[in-house]
Amino acid sequence: MEEKPVQDQASDVESGDNAVHMQGPADVDVSLTPRAALETARRLGEAAVESIINHAIDDQELKAAGLTPDRK
Image (cartoon, rainbow, N blue to C red; front, top):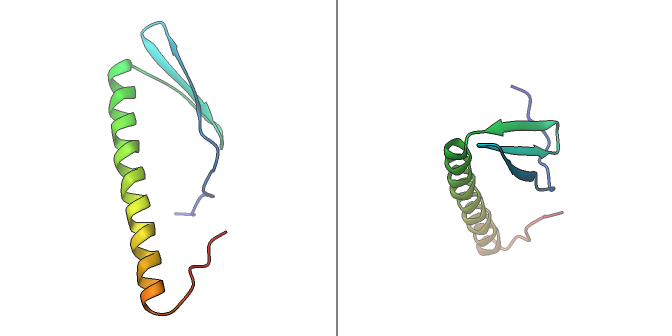
């Protein structure tokens, strides 16, 4: 599977008639039930925290090895 570019722009979200509509970068355009939107939000939050923690651990390991993290 081809790796997709990482987006740095948040999606726009609006509530509608028993639905949550989300539009964002990379042609994201989806409507979810409120229940599905809440579960998606929970999963996004957990994944974001995990990514932040992993990023911090990687930086600490590089610094411990005497290297400088190369971040854009």
